[in-house]
Image (cartoon, rainbow, N blue to C red; front, side, top):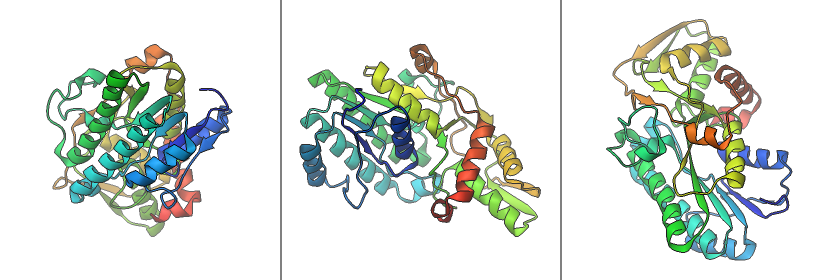
Length: 313
């Protein structure tokens, strides 16, 4: 990407989109186009078409999505499928129609089968059934990455996709019910410390294994791939390291300063038993993450404490 190229970041107010904007600016890209949801509803096809016809962005980072944790996914299956399918198809199609030189589509590691061989390689996609608790979201994301692949094959476009592991960092969603596991733990233990609660109850039994990537590292990879990768197969984004939810919970409790007891509600779902990405493709291209988990959680907790709007969500 040329430093003065016109770049559109869809979803720039979210955790991933805002990190991409920060990384682009850090690297000297200054012609960045953004629109808030109020200015451009990506589910509105006519509005998206009009935006692309007017602005003609040369590069697109598609980071916009309707996201949430297990509760949100299970309670709004239809909404998660429709909203994500519509917005990604609208943006990708409009980018193609208006001559976008390159597009990067952001998915999620939940696209891979529930019982995929670990660590999960990019080529295990669609080899067996998905995790039911986030199937609707996963199907929408699979459709987006496949549409990019099919446009490449049929029309010779240069559209790529990135599948990140569990993300966290600045501008995360800390909602007590609709957030992902790490930000939910940060809020729960902070509030328990503030209230002097003697115990905190967490979902499941703590046994599932999870991998976490600091969002600014993902943003760095996205810009790197825009400049260094072309291909139909997606690229995994992660650290290649994992820990149990129990270990994660104890780490968050320590970082937030909570000293009470941690209990486990085994009537609640665990989700997928293990989700470790094979990150050898990104490594072979010359990229590696830089933020270790404990350091990243400290940065995320600082964001929670000093960003009142995020803490209230």
